[in-house]
Image 1 (cartoon, rainbow, N blue to C red):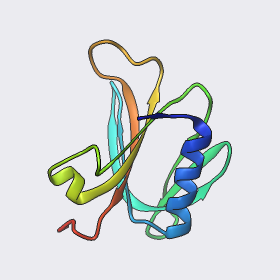
Image 2 (image 1 turned 90 degrees about the vertical axis):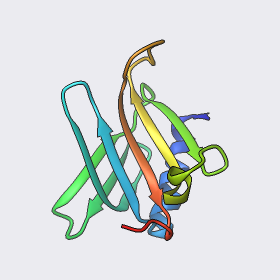
Image 3 (image 1 turned 60 degrees about the vertical axis):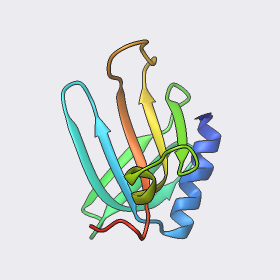
Length: 115
């Protein structure tokens, strides 16, 4: 489901308050990355996720140009629903009719995940 920036900030704030274990995964035309940790900070203008000792972090500026898409285990089935209870995907640029788009996804890890 498409959500606005303010809704995304509320979701990030909930994950921060609950100290939810998170997976952050970026997929771009030229590179990709993944890390796991917790949301350290969520403000009107950025979200910061840290892993371990604060030396590893991802900071994403939250602008109105981003497209936000939220999904939870009511919409996703199988192992993804079992391992990740909800996910917020940030899309950079217009969503094309076909082909990949640059994204960063933040997924809440469930206690059922085996690794």
